[in-house]
Amino acid sequence: MNINPNLELYLVTDEAACLGRDFFWVVEEAVKGGVTMVQLREKSLSTRTFIDRARRLKSLLETYNVPLIINDRVDVALAADADGVHIGQSDMPFQMAHRLLGEGKIIGLSAEKQSDVLEAEHWNLSYLAVSPLFNTPTKTDTEKPWELDGLQWARQQSRHPLVVIGGLHPGNAGEAVLNGATGIAVVSAICSAPSPREAARELKTIVQESILWP
Ligand code: TZP
Ligand code: MG
Image (cartoon, rainbow, N blue to C red; front, side, top):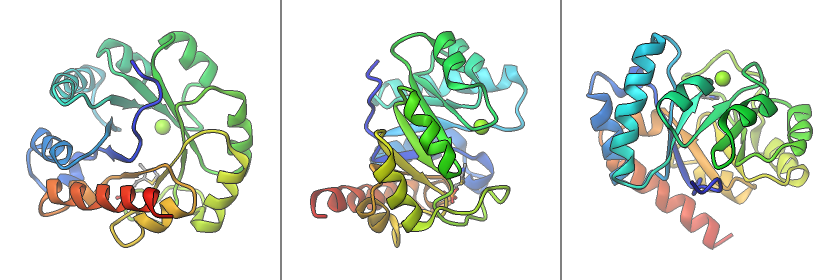
């Protein structure tokens, strides 16, 4: 597996944000619209159900050549043969996750404050997530948002590709890229959109045009 994935448009799933529509339909539509990577983020499923869902999602995404990342849980990532994990500051430390997963797996880490960005320089991450970039109703138990000046600071300090998450939508995705993000990670802008496929298409175009024409 390529541990340097295409980060342009990273879908982070939240079934509650799918507004009652079928979860796998929403993800598949988003992928058809251009999502480049998917993170399965489940905070309340049993381990068994989490693994079942991850395996089903893995076989769906495989047909599109889109990597599957598991949030928080290295054991679930291994059990489902996912492409990698996304860990936060209170999850398993990077070195242990790396040892358990072995080579060839994607590991992304959330940075919530400046010291997280500096510490992350020690590790061979696939990406660092600047989290949250903006305030978002989707996740309220966060540190203070980085905002664009914080993102610029992180871009100057870090050698890793940066993904931004939190409050991203078509109106601000371009400026996030212009201020240092390699890609954007979104929940509601895709999962809750009337057409997840069209929403993904629009966001992807904005990200790509901002990369090409800074
Ligand atoms: N981590 C930081 S903000 C966030 C997560 C999972 C939620 C982002 O959701 P949205 O709807 O894209 O703002
Ligand atoms: Mg976590």
